[in-house]
Length: 123
Image 1 (cartoon, one colour):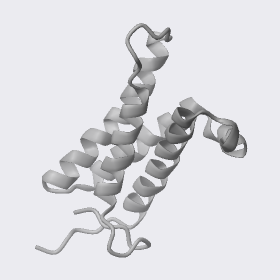
Image 2 (cartoon, one colour):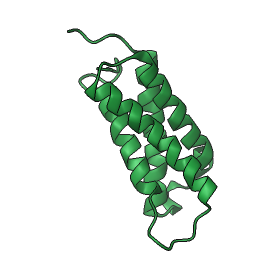
Image 3 (cartoon, one colour):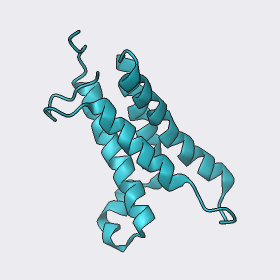
Image 4 (cartoon, rainbow, N blue to C red):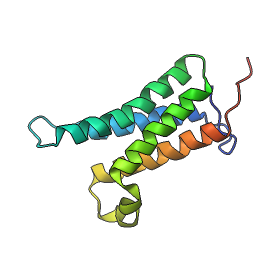
């Protein structure tokens, strides 16, 4: 289990899994909605990577690379969404945009905490 020392009692792997699932859910589009497919694929993979890493850490034996892989995926998602531009205007975004920004930032913070404070869980 990946635990974040700064977030007592909260498992970072579960947070990573939740933020990644939120990101994947927000990236799924309605049938017939116009979308740039290569961009959608990059954004979907950016959230799917931490989803797989979080699932491996939650349901298997946690390894340090799980948190690193999740941090990389959330970093790609945050860069692709340009969250530094979105955050000052968060109230003006659509609900989907707000949730995507929350998923990218929350996941980046949770995975960064997991990377920085990773320790092997007691048996």
